[in-house]
Length: 408
Image (cartoon, one colour):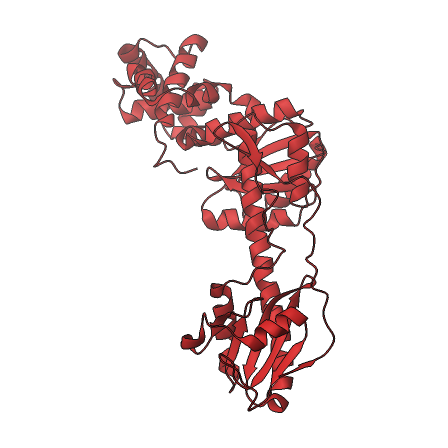
Protein backbone atom coordinates (compact mmCIF):
# COMPACT_ATOMS: atom_id res chain seq x y z
CA UNK A 1 0.00 0.00 0.00
CA UNK A 2 1.48 3.34 -0.97
CA UNK A 3 0.50 6.98 -0.83
CA UNK A 4 0.53 9.41 -3.70
CA UNK A 5 0.36 13.20 -3.59
CA UNK A 6 0.63 15.85 -0.91
CA UNK A 7 -1.33 15.92 2.33
CA UNK A 8 -4.44 18.02 2.18
CA UNK A 9 -5.47 20.58 4.78
CA UNK A 10 -8.30 18.90 6.66
CA UNK A 11 -9.31 21.82 8.85
CA UNK A 12 -13.03 22.30 9.09
CA UNK A 13 -14.55 25.30 7.43
CA UNK A 14 -16.03 27.62 10.05
CA UNK A 15 -19.74 28.22 10.02
CA UNK A 16 -20.83 31.69 9.10
CA UNK A 17 -20.40 34.06 12.02
CA UNK A 18 -23.83 35.58 12.15
CA UNK A 19 -26.59 35.26 14.68
CA UNK A 20 -28.63 32.24 13.60
CA UNK A 21 -32.15 32.84 12.29
CA UNK A 22 -34.80 32.84 14.98
CA UNK A 23 -38.24 31.34 15.24
CA UNK A 24 -40.97 30.98 17.80
CA UNK A 25 -42.48 27.79 19.10
CA UNK A 26 -44.97 27.57 21.99
CA UNK A 27 -44.61 31.32 22.47
CA UNK A 28 -40.85 31.16 23.05
CA UNK A 29 -38.22 32.80 20.87
CA UNK A 30 -35.79 30.11 19.73
CA UNK A 31 -33.06 29.76 17.16
CA UNK A 32 -34.32 28.56 13.80
CA UNK A 33 -30.83 27.19 13.25
CA UNK A 34 -29.22 26.10 16.55
CA UNK A 35 -25.69 27.34 17.10
CA UNK A 36 -24.27 23.82 16.83
CA UNK A 37 -26.22 22.91 13.69
CA UNK A 38 -24.55 21.98 10.43
CA UNK A 39 -25.74 24.39 7.77
CA UNK A 40 -26.42 23.11 4.26
CA UNK A 41 -23.16 24.49 2.88
CA UNK A 42 -21.25 22.12 5.19
CA UNK A 43 -21.39 18.83 3.33
CA UNK A 44 -22.34 15.63 5.12
CA UNK A 45 -22.28 12.51 2.97
CA UNK A 46 -24.58 9.89 4.44
CA UNK A 47 -25.31 6.42 3.13
CA UNK A 48 -28.30 7.48 1.06
CA UNK A 49 -26.36 10.21 -0.73
CA UNK A 50 -23.29 7.99 -1.18
CA UNK A 51 -25.33 5.18 -2.70
CA UNK A 52 -27.14 7.61 -4.97
CA UNK A 53 -23.83 8.99 -6.19
CA UNK A 54 -22.46 5.50 -6.85
CA UNK A 55 -25.55 4.57 -8.82
CA UNK A 56 -25.22 7.71 -10.92
CA UNK A 57 -21.60 7.10 -11.97
CA UNK A 58 -21.35 3.30 -11.99
CA UNK A 59 -23.20 2.61 -15.27
CA UNK A 60 -20.48 4.36 -17.27
CA UNK A 61 -17.65 2.31 -15.68
CA UNK A 62 -16.45 -1.26 -16.00
CA UNK A 63 -14.79 -1.09 -12.56
CA UNK A 64 -16.48 -1.35 -9.17
CA UNK A 65 -16.86 1.97 -7.35
CA UNK A 66 -17.05 2.47 -3.60
CA UNK A 67 -17.58 5.56 -1.49
CA UNK A 68 -16.28 5.47 2.08
CA UNK A 69 -16.79 7.92 4.91
CA UNK A 70 -13.89 9.67 6.64
CA UNK A 71 -13.58 6.75 9.07
CA UNK A 72 -13.11 4.28 6.22
CA UNK A 73 -16.52 2.60 6.36
CA UNK A 74 -17.98 1.75 2.97
CA UNK A 75 -21.26 3.69 2.68
CA UNK A 76 -21.91 3.36 -1.04
CA UNK A 77 -21.12 0.46 -3.38
CA UNK A 78 -22.55 -1.56 -6.25
CA UNK A 79 -21.55 -4.60 -4.20
CA UNK A 80 -24.16 -4.54 -1.44
CA UNK A 81 -22.22 -7.06 0.67
CA UNK A 82 -19.43 -4.52 1.23
CA UNK A 83 -21.59 -1.70 2.59
CA UNK A 84 -20.88 -1.15 6.27
CA UNK A 85 -17.48 -2.89 6.19
CA UNK A 86 -14.19 -1.19 7.02
CA UNK A 87 -11.78 -0.32 4.23
CA UNK A 88 -8.25 0.19 5.58
CA UNK A 89 -7.04 1.87 2.41
CA UNK A 90 -9.83 4.44 2.56
CA UNK A 91 -9.19 5.07 6.25
CA UNK A 92 -5.52 5.75 5.51
CA UNK A 93 -6.41 7.99 2.57
CA UNK A 94 -8.79 10.01 4.74
CA UNK A 95 -6.37 10.27 7.64
CA UNK A 96 -3.45 11.40 5.47
CA UNK A 97 -5.49 13.48 3.08
CA UNK A 98 -3.76 11.84 0.12
CA UNK A 99 -4.31 9.14 -2.50
CA UNK A 100 -3.64 5.56 -1.44
CA UNK A 101 -2.99 2.80 -3.99
CA UNK A 102 -3.35 -0.90 -3.18
CA UNK A 103 -1.41 -3.13 -5.55
CA UNK A 104 -2.27 -6.79 -6.16
CA UNK A 105 -0.76 -8.80 -3.32
CA UNK A 106 -0.90 -5.86 -0.86
CA UNK A 107 -4.54 -6.37 0.07
CA UNK A 108 -5.55 -6.48 3.70
CA UNK A 109 -8.83 -7.65 5.17
CA UNK A 110 -11.67 -5.63 3.68
CA UNK A 111 -9.57 -4.19 0.84
CA UNK A 112 -9.02 -5.07 -2.78
CA UNK A 113 -6.52 -3.81 -5.35
CA UNK A 114 -7.37 -0.33 -6.52
CA UNK A 115 -7.07 3.39 -5.87
CA UNK A 116 -8.60 5.41 -3.01
CA UNK A 117 -8.71 9.18 -3.40
CA UNK A 118 -9.90 11.50 -0.62
CA UNK A 119 -12.81 13.73 -1.59
CA UNK A 120 -11.99 17.24 -0.37
CA UNK A 121 -14.88 19.59 0.19
CA UNK A 122 -14.73 22.88 2.06
CA UNK A 123 -11.12 22.24 2.99
CA UNK A 124 -11.73 18.89 4.66
CA UNK A 125 -11.97 15.23 3.78
CA UNK A 126 -15.68 14.54 3.36
CA UNK A 127 -15.33 11.01 1.98
CA UNK A 128 -13.06 8.71 0.00
CA UNK A 129 -13.76 7.49 -3.52
CA UNK A 130 -12.38 4.06 -4.34
CA UNK A 131 -12.11 2.28 -7.70
CA UNK A 132 -11.28 -1.41 -7.80
CA UNK A 133 -8.66 -2.62 -10.24
CA UNK A 134 -4.95 -2.45 -11.08
CA UNK A 135 -3.77 0.95 -9.78
CA UNK A 136 -1.95 1.92 -12.98
CA UNK A 137 -5.13 1.24 -14.92
CA UNK A 138 -7.74 2.79 -12.68
CA UNK A 139 -5.85 5.84 -11.30
CA UNK A 140 -6.85 8.13 -14.22
CA UNK A 141 -10.39 6.83 -13.97
CA UNK A 142 -10.50 7.49 -10.23
CA UNK A 143 -9.16 11.04 -10.64
CA UNK A 144 -11.88 11.89 -13.14
CA UNK A 145 -14.44 10.13 -10.98
CA UNK A 146 -13.58 12.25 -7.94
CA UNK A 147 -14.17 15.42 -9.96
CA UNK A 148 -17.48 14.00 -11.18
CA UNK A 149 -18.58 13.15 -7.65
CA UNK A 150 -17.57 16.62 -6.46
CA UNK A 151 -19.74 18.15 -9.17
CA UNK A 152 -22.69 15.94 -8.26
CA UNK A 153 -22.33 16.85 -4.59
CA UNK A 154 -22.27 20.55 -5.46
CA UNK A 155 -25.54 20.05 -7.31
CA UNK A 156 -26.96 18.34 -4.22
CA UNK A 157 -25.70 21.21 -2.11
CA UNK A 158 -27.43 23.79 -4.27
CA UNK A 159 -30.71 21.90 -3.94
CA UNK A 160 -30.24 21.53 -0.18
CA UNK A 161 -29.37 25.21 0.25
CA UNK A 162 -32.46 26.27 -1.68
CA UNK A 163 -34.70 23.99 0.41
CA UNK A 164 -33.06 25.08 3.67
CA UNK A 165 -33.36 28.77 2.81
CA UNK A 166 -36.99 28.33 1.80
CA UNK A 167 -37.78 26.55 5.06
CA UNK A 168 -36.04 29.16 7.23
CA UNK A 169 -37.66 32.02 5.31
CA UNK A 170 -41.07 30.47 5.95
CA UNK A 171 -40.27 30.19 9.67
CA UNK A 172 -39.17 33.81 9.85
CA UNK A 173 -42.25 35.18 8.12
CA UNK A 174 -44.60 32.91 10.06
CA UNK A 175 -43.03 34.12 13.31
CA UNK A 176 -43.93 37.73 12.56
CA UNK A 177 -47.60 37.20 13.32
CA UNK A 178 -46.81 35.74 16.77
CA UNK A 179 -45.49 39.09 18.06
CA UNK A 180 -42.42 37.59 19.73
CA UNK A 181 -39.82 38.59 17.16
CA UNK A 182 -37.94 41.80 17.90
CA UNK A 183 -36.56 43.91 15.09
CA UNK A 184 -32.99 43.07 16.06
CA UNK A 185 -33.66 39.35 15.91
CA UNK A 186 -35.55 39.74 12.63
CA UNK A 187 -32.57 41.51 11.05
CA UNK A 188 -30.18 38.87 12.43
CA UNK A 189 -32.38 36.05 11.13
CA UNK A 190 -32.49 37.62 7.68
CA UNK A 191 -28.71 38.01 7.68
CA UNK A 192 -28.50 34.29 8.48
CA UNK A 193 -30.11 33.52 5.11
CA UNK A 194 -27.97 36.10 3.27
CA UNK A 195 -30.82 38.61 3.05
CA UNK A 196 -29.52 41.79 4.74
CA UNK A 197 -32.84 43.64 4.77
CA UNK A 198 -33.29 46.76 6.87
CA UNK A 199 -36.32 48.77 8.05
CA UNK A 200 -38.68 50.34 7.20
CA UNK A 201 -40.72 47.33 6.16
CA UNK A 202 -43.60 46.20 4.02
CA UNK A 203 -45.46 42.90 4.11
CA UNK A 204 -47.59 41.89 1.15
CA UNK A 205 -49.60 38.73 0.63
CA UNK A 206 -50.03 37.62 -2.98
CA UNK A 207 -53.10 35.53 -3.65
CA UNK A 208 -52.71 33.12 -6.53
CA UNK A 209 -54.30 30.14 -8.21
CA UNK A 210 -52.65 26.83 -7.46
CA UNK A 211 -49.30 25.41 -6.41
CA UNK A 212 -47.70 25.84 -9.83
CA UNK A 213 -48.39 29.58 -9.71
CA UNK A 214 -46.83 29.76 -6.26
CA UNK A 215 -43.66 28.05 -7.47
CA UNK A 216 -43.44 30.46 -10.41
CA UNK A 217 -43.91 33.49 -8.15
CA UNK A 218 -41.23 32.34 -5.72
CA UNK A 219 -38.85 31.75 -8.62
CA UNK A 220 -39.49 35.28 -9.90
CA UNK A 221 -39.00 36.75 -6.43
CA UNK A 222 -35.59 35.10 -6.01
CA UNK A 223 -34.31 37.51 -8.65
CA UNK A 224 -35.68 40.58 -6.85
CA UNK A 225 -33.29 42.31 -4.47
CA UNK A 226 -34.45 43.61 -1.11
CA UNK A 227 -37.21 41.03 -0.57
CA UNK A 228 -37.72 37.54 0.85
CA UNK A 229 -40.76 35.40 0.17
CA UNK A 230 -42.44 32.14 1.20
CA UNK A 231 -45.71 30.35 0.55
CA UNK A 232 -47.78 30.44 3.76
CA UNK A 233 -51.49 29.65 4.20
CA UNK A 234 -52.10 29.52 0.45
CA UNK A 235 -50.54 32.88 -0.36
CA UNK A 236 -47.03 34.09 -1.13
CA UNK A 237 -45.85 36.37 1.67
CA UNK A 238 -43.33 38.98 0.55
CA UNK A 239 -41.30 40.93 3.10
CA UNK A 240 -39.60 44.02 1.68
CA UNK A 241 -36.87 45.99 3.41
CA UNK A 242 -36.26 49.73 2.98
CA UNK A 243 -39.76 49.85 1.56
CA UNK A 244 -41.18 52.71 -0.47
CA UNK A 245 -44.44 53.19 -2.36
CA UNK A 246 -42.50 53.28 -5.63
CA UNK A 247 -40.68 50.06 -4.79
CA UNK A 248 -43.96 48.28 -4.00
CA UNK A 249 -45.54 49.51 -7.23
CA UNK A 250 -42.57 48.32 -9.27
CA UNK A 251 -42.69 44.91 -7.59
CA UNK A 252 -46.37 44.53 -8.41
CA UNK A 253 -45.78 45.63 -11.98
CA UNK A 254 -42.99 43.09 -12.35
CA UNK A 255 -45.09 40.21 -11.04
CA UNK A 256 -48.43 41.16 -12.55
CA UNK A 257 -47.92 40.17 -16.17
CA UNK A 258 -50.80 40.42 -18.67
CA UNK A 259 -51.32 36.67 -18.35
CA UNK A 260 -51.37 36.88 -14.52
CA UNK A 261 -54.64 38.72 -13.91
CA UNK A 262 -55.50 36.18 -11.22
CA UNK A 263 -52.98 37.76 -8.83
CA UNK A 264 -54.28 39.91 -5.99
CA UNK A 265 -52.01 41.83 -3.64
CA UNK A 266 -53.02 42.24 0.01
CA UNK A 267 -50.66 45.04 0.94
CA UNK A 268 -49.56 46.06 4.39
CA UNK A 269 -48.29 49.50 5.26
CA UNK A 270 -45.39 50.95 3.31
CA UNK A 271 -42.52 52.17 5.48
CA UNK A 272 -43.84 50.18 8.43
CA UNK A 273 -42.22 50.09 11.86
CA UNK A 274 -41.61 46.71 13.49
CA UNK A 275 -44.83 47.02 15.49
CA UNK A 276 -46.81 47.87 12.36
CA UNK A 277 -45.15 44.99 10.53
CA UNK A 278 -46.23 42.47 13.16
CA UNK A 279 -49.74 43.99 13.13
CA UNK A 280 -49.92 43.50 9.37
CA UNK A 281 -48.60 39.96 9.68
CA UNK A 282 -51.26 39.09 12.25
CA UNK A 283 -53.96 40.61 10.04
CA UNK A 284 -52.76 38.73 7.00
CA UNK A 285 -52.59 35.44 8.87
CA UNK A 286 -56.12 35.86 10.26
CA UNK A 287 -57.59 36.76 6.87
CA UNK A 288 -55.87 33.90 5.04
CA UNK A 289 -57.30 31.46 7.56
CA UNK A 290 -60.72 32.34 6.03
CA UNK A 291 -60.14 32.05 2.27
CA UNK A 292 -63.84 32.33 1.52
CA UNK A 293 -63.84 35.71 3.20
CA UNK A 294 -60.84 36.85 1.17
CA UNK A 295 -62.59 35.65 -1.95
CA UNK A 296 -65.39 38.11 -1.22
CA UNK A 297 -62.92 40.97 -0.93
CA UNK A 298 -61.02 40.19 -4.12
CA UNK A 299 -64.29 39.84 -5.96
CA UNK A 300 -64.17 43.61 -6.36
CA UNK A 301 -61.68 43.07 -9.21
CA UNK A 302 -58.99 45.24 -7.65
CA UNK A 303 -55.45 43.97 -8.07
CA UNK A 304 -54.30 45.70 -4.88
CA UNK A 305 -56.25 45.62 -1.65
CA UNK A 306 -54.68 47.39 1.36
CA UNK A 307 -54.98 45.40 4.56
CA UNK A 308 -56.21 48.59 6.21
CA UNK A 309 -59.32 48.49 3.99
CA UNK A 310 -60.32 45.03 5.24
CA UNK A 311 -61.32 45.99 8.75
CA UNK A 312 -64.76 44.41 8.52
CA UNK A 313 -63.37 41.21 7.01
CA UNK A 314 -60.75 41.06 9.74
CA UNK A 315 -63.37 41.49 12.46
CA UNK A 316 -65.36 38.65 10.92
CA UNK A 317 -62.28 36.46 10.43
CA UNK A 318 -61.51 36.22 14.15
CA UNK A 319 -65.03 35.16 15.17
CA UNK A 320 -65.50 31.52 16.24
CA UNK A 321 -67.29 29.26 13.78
CA UNK A 322 -70.44 29.00 15.90
CA UNK A 323 -70.84 32.77 16.03
CA UNK A 324 -70.16 33.10 12.31
CA UNK A 325 -73.05 30.80 11.58
CA UNK A 326 -75.35 32.76 13.85
CA UNK A 327 -74.36 36.16 12.42
CA UNK A 328 -74.92 34.93 8.87
CA UNK A 329 -78.03 32.86 9.51
CA UNK A 330 -79.93 35.50 11.47
CA UNK A 331 -80.08 37.62 8.32
CA UNK A 332 -79.63 35.26 5.37
CA UNK A 333 -81.68 32.20 6.33
CA UNK A 334 -84.93 33.62 4.88
CA UNK A 335 -83.24 34.48 1.58
CA UNK A 336 -82.75 32.22 -1.41
CA UNK A 337 -79.64 32.31 -3.56
CA UNK A 338 -81.10 34.81 -6.06
CA UNK A 339 -81.87 37.36 -3.35
CA UNK A 340 -78.50 36.79 -1.68
CA UNK A 341 -76.68 37.40 -4.93
CA UNK A 342 -78.78 40.49 -5.59
CA UNK A 343 -77.82 41.87 -2.17
CA UNK A 344 -74.18 40.99 -2.74
CA UNK A 345 -74.01 42.75 -6.11
CA UNK A 346 -76.04 45.73 -4.86
CA UNK A 347 -73.49 46.33 -2.09
CA UNK A 348 -70.59 45.83 -4.48
CA UNK A 349 -72.09 48.37 -6.88
CA UNK A 350 -72.24 51.02 -4.13
CA UNK A 351 -76.04 50.77 -3.68
CA UNK A 352 -76.71 51.72 -7.30
CA UNK A 353 -79.86 50.13 -8.69
CA UNK A 354 -78.86 50.91 -12.29
CA UNK A 355 -75.37 49.41 -11.93
CA UNK A 356 -76.77 46.37 -10.15
CA UNK A 357 -79.30 45.77 -12.91
CA UNK A 358 -76.53 45.97 -15.52
CA UNK A 359 -74.26 43.62 -13.57
CA UNK A 360 -77.05 41.06 -13.11
CA UNK A 361 -78.41 41.47 -16.63
CA UNK A 362 -81.95 42.27 -15.46
CA UNK A 363 -84.31 45.24 -15.63
CA UNK A 364 -83.93 47.86 -12.91
CA UNK A 365 -87.54 47.22 -11.81
CA UNK A 366 -86.54 43.62 -11.13
CA UNK A 367 -83.81 44.85 -8.82
CA UNK A 368 -86.28 47.13 -7.00
CA UNK A 369 -88.69 44.23 -6.55
CA UNK A 370 -85.94 42.02 -5.17
CA UNK A 371 -84.78 44.73 -2.73
CA UNK A 372 -88.38 45.10 -1.53
CA UNK A 373 -88.55 41.33 -1.08
CA UNK A 374 -85.31 41.35 0.92
CA UNK A 375 -86.74 44.04 3.20
CA UNK A 376 -89.93 42.06 3.69
CA UNK A 377 -88.08 38.89 4.63
CA UNK A 378 -85.28 40.37 6.77
CA UNK A 379 -86.52 43.75 7.89
CA UNK A 380 -83.47 45.36 6.28
CA UNK A 381 -83.93 48.10 3.70
CA UNK A 382 -80.44 47.84 2.30
CA UNK A 383 -80.88 51.06 0.33
CA UNK A 384 -80.10 52.68 3.69
CA UNK A 385 -76.51 52.74 4.91
CA UNK A 386 -77.05 51.17 8.33
CA UNK A 387 -79.06 48.28 6.88
CA UNK A 388 -76.51 47.85 4.08
CA UNK A 389 -73.77 47.45 6.72
CA UNK A 390 -75.80 44.76 8.50
CA UNK A 391 -76.27 42.89 5.23
CA UNK A 392 -72.58 43.17 4.39
CA UNK A 393 -71.62 41.74 7.78
CA UNK A 394 -73.98 38.81 7.27
CA UNK A 395 -72.69 38.10 3.77
CA UNK A 396 -69.09 38.31 4.96
CA UNK A 397 -69.82 35.94 7.87
CA UNK A 398 -71.45 33.52 5.43
CA UNK A 399 -68.41 33.62 3.11
CA UNK A 400 -66.01 33.16 6.04
CA UNK A 401 -67.51 29.77 6.85
CA UNK A 402 -66.24 28.26 3.61
CA UNK A 403 -62.65 27.60 4.68
CA UNK A 404 -61.93 24.34 2.91
CA UNK A 405 -63.91 24.72 -0.31
CA UNK A 406 -63.17 28.35 -1.12
CA UNK A 407 -61.17 29.15 -4.22
CA UNK A 408 -59.24 32.42 -4.18
